[in-house]
Length: 274
Ligand SMILES: NC(=O)CC(=O)C(=O)O
Image 1: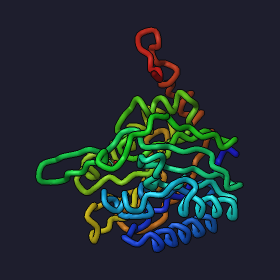
Image 2: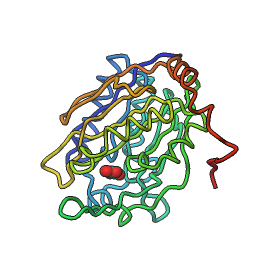
Image 3: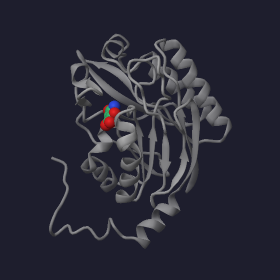
């Protein structure tokens, strides 16, 4: 399959886990009815993005949220990039994206590698490292028809990680995220565009809808960007599903016509995993 539809569920996340799970399911079913092959949820989609809720609502794998996503992937024969959830594992908690294939199988799991510790005076202070441990693996999953790099939110600010995923074969990078109303307007659109253009990939960034009732105001503006830096689908702040076509032939064409990846001076610099 060289062309397929991706859907990003920009859902409004509330304090009620069951409500969030039902909303995610409804949006995934709607995306399937529109013939999406891959459906993406946002970062921390089953509870509010605050330290206390994430600690209280953390789940082990397998657990309630992941079982529901896996069953849904199987029933609808879909790829689901399950946003992220707080994952409890051996007395630690990670910010983890679980990725399911159309048989409900776990295709991969990404634990956020770069924790979002930020202190912009008078604007936003947030310390993810109070809650989470950092993951330590680069994640590229193979669907059989394309390789997809998966990272979470703050990870997208680190160009080395994005490039490593591409060197491992990623033609599409998918990032469940939750920028906010300070960093979003300043950096969201530009970061998505430059990561897509530098790496010649489709770049899919999924945000929750903005919820002004919550303590963390997500930016919204989920976006699907093509490898030439053109927007193929985008939301504003509100709850919606964004659709876009991924064309793997176009990735190949852009990489041939503007051979950035080929023309790297590997004799002068290299990027390796430690
Ligand atoms: N929430 C994040 O992890 C990152 C973010 O909001 C930002 O980088 O800005």
